[in-house]
Image (cartoon, rainbow, N blue to C red; front, side):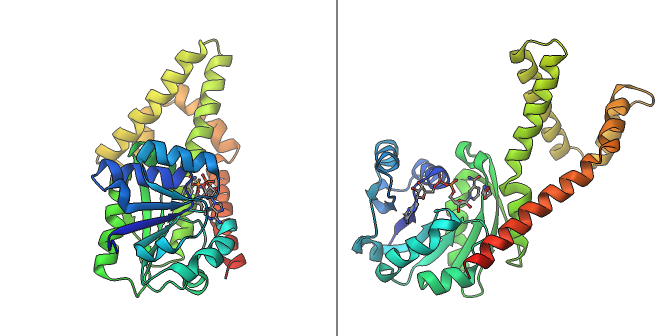
Length: 270
Ligand SMILES: NC(=O)C1=CN([C@@H]2O[C@H](COP(=O)(O)OP(=O)(O)OC[C@H]3O[C@@H](n4cnc5c(N)ncnc54)[C@H](O)[C@@H]3O)[C@@H](O)[C@H]2O)C=CC1
Ligand SMILES: O=C(O)[C@@H]1CCC=N1
């Protein structure tokens, strides 16, 4: 038995990002196995990383020292029924939105559980993830989860499981809000007469530059915004329109809707 085997249940986007990171960081492809029903996904993982791929639950799952749940929350119940009989005393790490430790314990027979909420910049090693450990998880389990997430970017721990719903709403879904704003700014720039490629470069450069400035500056985002905003100038004209339309409140409501949905997904599976 290979005691360091890592088993992924689900071999989609998130699993691909995590596996790619592990391989780059020096994990042996032969120590990683993936259960993935879609043939094209299996073939892609096998070709890209050389990992062991299986269409459905197999006895080899019993080798796994850690199991990573990377199916959609809606597929978890079915996958757990198939895989649970094969698991040994593994650490279970889940990236599924909403699915609670209690449900993972009950349906997968897991005891030591770490939940992680990554985001898609993990695909290029620039993600940020929130992590939560169940009380039964050991310091070694936490370290193992950190090693899994390390190659995908940054991570931080939260103390309460419910806080993961806020992490999901903020940074898990967050890249979609950034892309939404990028789309809107590129469209507006193009409509005002810029070539689409130039509008895209300007918008992307603005996002990455502003994010880097906010990360490095001792000033708060509000102070940095004020630095851009000359009295009676162009920025003030734009921010007035955003305030008039309640954009900050709309963002608040949008994130709350995402957190509510995470809670709902969790309740459906308890
Ligand atoms: N996409 C994102 O931005 C993020 C996703 N997540 C979470 O990660 C999880 C996976 O998301 P993605 O990778 O984006 O989805 P995905 O759809 O790319 O991957 C899920 C994979 O699970 C496979 N699958 C379905 N039923 C299965 C079963 N019974 N056994 C084994 N595999 C099965 C599917 O064929 C698919 O390849 C979700 O629970 C999601 O909440 C977390 C953070 C960010
Ligand atoms: O939209 C979703 O449900 C997943 C979780 C966070 C990002 N994507």
